[in-house]
Image (tube, rainbow over all chains, first blue to last red; front, side, top):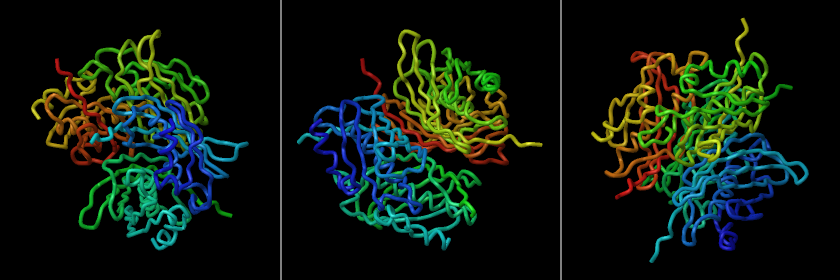
Length: 137
Length: 137
Length: 137
Length: 137
């Protein structure tokens, strides 16, 4: 888990976007993103690409919690439904593994918007992760 | 078409990412993105969230070319398969409408990576767009 | 709800497959299918097409519980992950509406296999339903 | 290819549905289904589950054309967009491999309805196939 924490935002795109890891446990991860103007569509709601990135990376982190040392996960595909226009101070995302596996892991992500007092489910994704082995030397 | 050109990168997230519209025609759009370090995963390949954003926004632009004045499109859902690790100087994306409609438009996007000399299909998405009417005053 | 019960298996394909409605409540439906040899793949597990049909029709039934009289739902698209090889006496499926709407409804379906004593999640689907109005004369 | 031909409709569900293999070549397959009343929804159009089964099995057949002897493919997940109400005498489906691979194959399927004279694209699917090894004794 410490390794996952350490690696979470070493991806430049994740650091640039501003995503942060809230918690990690076997098969489950939580992340958040403080929203800024640059995350938005022209109409002031969060861009689908931001929601997709958050959903994908959170699912990948949940999947990474259930693989052996030396392995890593790559997203093979995902599907996301955008349920409501997302706005507010921040996004909060929960990723959950539906099916662990040696070769494929399936996870889902739920993205919530709003403030701590008023949170709504704004997007839901299903993500298929391929488990890769780090090449030995 | 001029209106679509004008609106293309008024979305702050698209301008921030660096996407540019290459061409637009009825039911078809082409975009590109010059890759920088901030678009990458920790392992140096393009982050799935970048590919998803490019695929979604390009499909939406293709869909926007087939609606009436006063209407706009919102992504209802999309699915993307990441076919190969994406790298190189830039991404190039072609969005094509599979089925126009008054309420729903279905489009697909193909994302290519690499340089002008050596280009490969790295991701493919199917996108469902909802056609919305701008509220009259 | 009585109308949904009455219509459930008037679709010839559903009656032919053998699906039955177990329960219906606002935003939720449960169905089952007694498995026979004709539902299988060559290797003795349930064919993906059977799982997809069950997931789709159960989600549609859940969606139909949240529309007005005179309207009906059509599947616009769905995505299904096949998590485990499905076998056993029967399939059991729960459909849940994630987001109701006047034009689009998003629902998910979980399909379980096995016997009453031993049940496992074998597939999960996300389904986008279009709400249609019956044409008045 | 002969082996794929031989195995095509050994799946009881495919034989029961009535699907037939039209042609097979490396990375490409064509199938057809003569429509009967039992393939329909209550409103007389083809049930989404039939279209999904045809799309899935045709993509799997295209994928099976690009694996080694002793291996087989299983559908990991698929997504299908239903573009138009499908009707007419028969369905015709073309499956194409987008990306071959040793562990995962991605294919797409296009389903057409109608008669030989008048055919329309009614559904399109993207399918992720897992390549499995037959266990040696």
